[in-house]
Length: 135
Ligand SMILES: [Zn+2]
Image 1 (cartoon, rainbow, N blue to C red):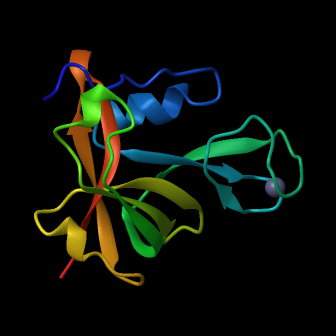
Image 2: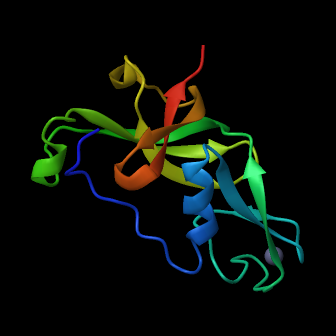
């Protein structure tokens, strides 16, 4: 664990998401008004503006929608990580989220690859949702 990597900062909308990550659970929002799921967590449904939202645990599986390879560290803390993959992941429940692909051969990532969530440890028990490719 690199202590210089940024820590997640929860707000009122994302508190449950970050608490779930600490327990290796990927939490997303589902609207009780229209039934759609979304990510990032929001106070209002981005589809129908309902305030009647629930939290559900996503299965953690998804598909790579797109990706890029980061070759220049955005801050000194990431110097030891480059090159690394940042991908848009379409979760099986519907939402699209951005995360790193972190398996051993992540630089071989291709659009359409099947992935599953893993939880990268940060300081003080915090965890970041990342993905590895499935066979
Ligand atoms: Zn809705």
